[in-house]
Image (cartoon, rainbow, N blue to C red; front, side, top):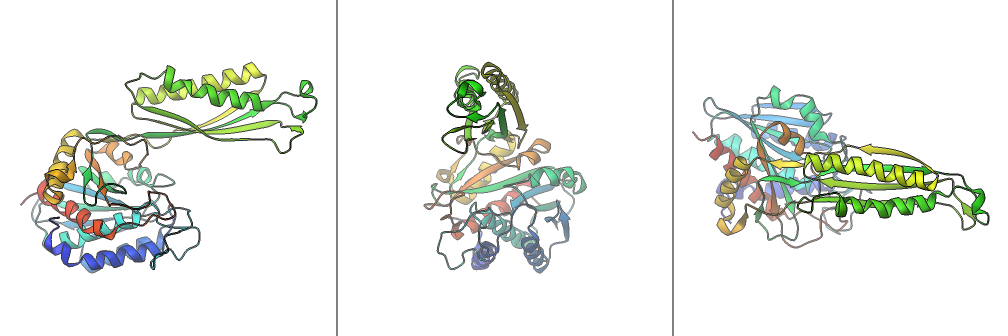
Length: 386
């Protein structure tokens, strides 16, 4: 694996950074200690500017190259998940109920490694903007950073990010031009009838049949309304109703996740969701209240920047170690907000065998960090050569 020699030299430091972050996970926008740790390392490296407090705990750091040129943005997410860790590792989380189960500790370590290398060598023109973002898992920190004007404030012209992926060979890069991750919307439905004694259903308006019928009918949206050549998901993930065997409840609730890539399909899913739930409710004599949250948009890679990023990845992983036209993922990612405003690419980096993302036994593979850091560093040198 042709990791840059200088990055290979300080790979043990990257492991130490990553494991420190793993032991001290923080949620959502409350990444105060994480941000302080990142800022301290950046000061040690001698980066030129450190801008803190963006999106509450986000950081944008600037490294000046040699001579005039554009600004390239590199992003790492920093937040953890509300999961109780079950790795048994010596560096396991010290905070009960919170752990880095998605590898954001590794992403942060990778970008810090690239920062250390780029601040030392500066073999590029223009500037690099290092974006350390909170609240990817919950809260859309990427959107908040965009809304707070980081792209305009720092003149960022293109953006790139990496996400680790278990069960893919260590060091293998996977990406694709166009949509790579889905838009994610969430719906909460409350069906209200009239409760009463289970022995006298004729005196009640039972919301449970309406909930069951709605959940079943919602499955026809993808199978009967969406073009079969377009990807979409509608999954009812929660149904709650009732408290006892002899009581007909007054309300029933259900929740659904709705995912798609195409904006027109996304609008269709929302329209049909409302029509089906409201129509089913009317047919059963209950009323429907729907809260439909328009969540993260689809993550859409720029084709030209994706081809460029894949070429750089091949320098690090070899031709056989890069899948430039990999499949799409139905998961979601708030890097999408940056890609809506600037061209760029999002790539997955294999980390070998191990538990999957968001699993209590997951742990980032430290051997992947120098590979990701080398990719980021080489990307800058190739995008903005001297």
